[in-house]
Length: 394
Ligand SMILES: *[C@@H]1O[C@H](CO)[C@@H](O)[C@H](O)[C@H]1NC(C)=O
Image 1: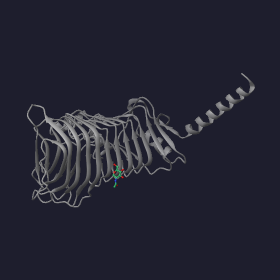
Image 2: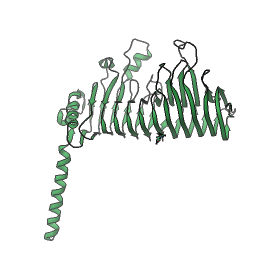
Image 3: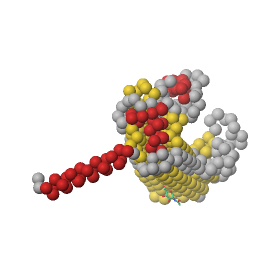
Image 4: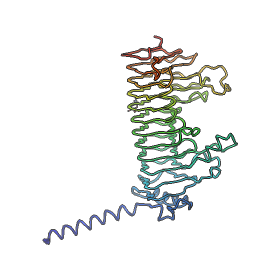
């Protein structure tokens, strides 16, 4: 080697070293704070210390959870933090098997008021088998906890995360702004009770892309106050489909506006795309919704609006939903229905659904019998081929 090459490579090594040492000073590895990757030692305190270190860091910081299995009890990662934080998980995080340890917390892992935050990778296993058994046996069980919750978070990326065996909902976004969720996998048995996939409410500018949800309740549940939501490249099923609702739980309720569900596949799910509201008075609304480029494979109710939801026939005094539904477009939805009634648009008796558009719908019923549609108080127009025949009022 010539002198200049040696000098150059020395310089390069030095630069690389400096670079590593700068970033290393902002790495908060939970193991350095006492977490044990053995799946039995409680690592909650260690995770909190690592978080607190990262959260006060003057420059962007990374919390690292290395390979191994870490036991975490109920935990809140509180913000806002000083700088951008990446929470990088290579290992598996498990919950205590005894569901009674959660009490009435409502959550297992909560990210509260974080901003400029990324959660990357990792498996989160809530191990809810015992909890589901309690539920199924009709005993008096605690209400259950959501696995991963984001409350009042802003500018968040959640990527490559896997959540398994949640007690109730896998992942909740409440009061959030500007969130991208990509390549996330949520898995629980199809017969596990109330295991929703994603639940989003009171949030603006959320995108779910490339996720797989196989669970026992809604793949995505969209609650009041959701605006500018995009769900794309979702694989849903088993599960109850994508559901706007249930709405009209409250008399005074925020509306749902500008929701798109596109380029997604529903397999063996109870519903495809659903809008659901209690038959109760409410000032809530649903407007500007696009359901497009969807494939239904053996789905019980591929297209459904149900404004008569009143499962217990209690607290639904006059059986009319006050929720006003308008400007809903169903475009290019194809595949098979597991029931004959492939399209069901049952709107409120008091405020009809208006501005419904059906375009290029082709849903068939498996048994060689043509699929049917049923409408009540649904007003709009049809474009292109509609199969089953449109039942909309003009
Ligand atoms: C509707 O939501 C999308 C995100 O899905 C966003 O890009 C668009 O700007 C929103 N439209 C309006 C009018 O806010």
